[in-house]
Image (cartoon, one colour):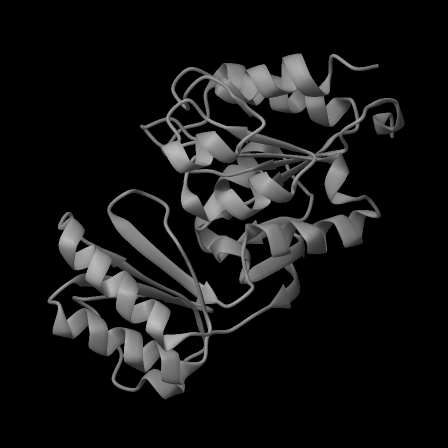
Length: 251
């Protein structure tokens, strides 16, 4: 491994709005520079709100065999197919979040350990499943704000988003930051040696905790304000800037 010569040892990449273009593809240029980083001994870790089976094809496309953080930190994978740790939502809280969605007639969705459910396809019994994340999506700012207030009253929840029109809920204390901290333990490195890149509130904690926190040009303003630097958008190969100008430039 050659990464001892570099200040940063791990590149933690959000997927939607960061690694992926708006067409949900990895550009050739971004892929090329990720491979340059990997060849130099930099660990590249997907850090996503997606479930593992939705993230894995992109990891395979890049040839990643490194740890992976999925479902906003509710799962940390030692390798793409080897689970390291999983943190579940209290089903009682899932039941209450479901009631809030019905009350506000809001589109909702939730990940169990093996399936994605939503408003059109819900479960007969919440208590028969293991829950990882719950979410709401609405264009109505007032409704979304009211739901947020009710969720905060529940307690025991980590509330973020992956777009300006949704809310994503994980167990309290679980985030991409907690996930990447677990990855650091697995790799024997520190958070100071991490570069974290993202665009939404579910990236905020890890961007703040990393040695170098990077916001994409298309990131939400709160994320840009918290980041150490802002690069190009997900359609402008912003990740290339990170690798070329801030990771591999330091020998």
